[in-house]
Length: 371
Ligand SMILES: Nc1ncnc2c1ncn2[C@@H]1O[C@H](COP(=O)(O)OP(=O)(O)OP(=O)(O)O)[C@@H](O)[C@H]1O
Ligand SMILES: [Mg+2]
Image (tube, rainbow, N blue to C red; front, side):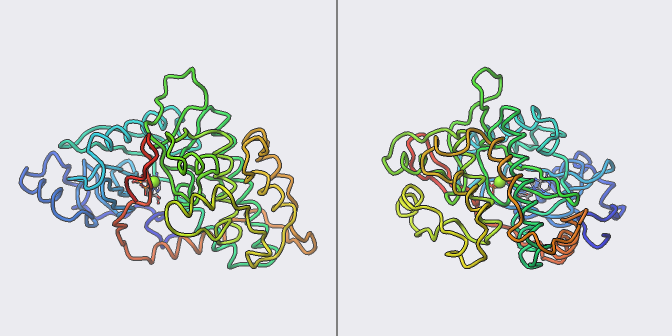
């Protein structure tokens, strides 16, 4: 693949390479920082050139940048955060940095640098050349047939194993969602965004997050019950994260969430707390009894009824057979074709900024404070 800027060998115009931020006169530096919230291709940020806007939220900006050493990703606090306080965002980036440093490049991007630029905190990480899990799964579903189905099975197993490795290393992600799982061309998964991560064990120097975060679609029932009762929100737990990963896999296989959740904060929490997952048949796709049984157990309302660990859940996923074993083609690189297509499509998309953060924060008192 050479057509995507995410994977092409770096061809960056000379003028982009030549002006480190320290060399830019103060006046033009502040113009760069204060004007557009989304930085244009070729703008200088630290001593790197902006190649692409990955995300612009109310409080943070994420850029793919290029410097002589290659591509990397810069996550930096906004110039004047609109939602949360600058201190909150600063401490969340520091929190994330601690976990990235601890994980040292697996199964998360390697932390390359961390610092402050004119009171804006930033993290620089390795750039992961991959496609988010939702896009990958959509390409597999579109492909259809036994081949597409086998790709979905492998995707589910890969994600299960990646989370099992994370938990075995004593870390809970705390923010499971399709945009935080990138699939590389070789089919391996990398997890992003450790701003709400939590140590699974108590004896550690790693920090605990002051609040819960995440997308409500992936909340576990016990968390929903606590939030409905307006009790202090419960910390991310191993069984809770197992539920979230199962909800993610259900979403990737079927293209829809495990229930037709009602919109509205309380209504959705009630649905999460009380309803059982729709069968694949009820979701309008072919039944897959073995996969549905494994996901059904991980999506149990009671934590004790789930698998005893993420590793046990992952092992159960590894044992799920294809829905129909007839005519399964041998396929040594199951992700390569849909990924090629997804990467090519991503390269064609305009660089549209995302203007609203997708994360709902729960304060220690369980009230939603931003969306
Ligand atoms: N290391 C990386 N390699 C490739 N893409 C990345 C990397 N880090 C972030 N991204 C892209 O940027 C997006 C936003 O990153 P991230 O979730 O870490 O930021 P965020 O500001 O915390 O976002 P949100 O609040 O919406 O969760 C990711 O969904 C992904 O598409
Ligand atoms: Mg994120």
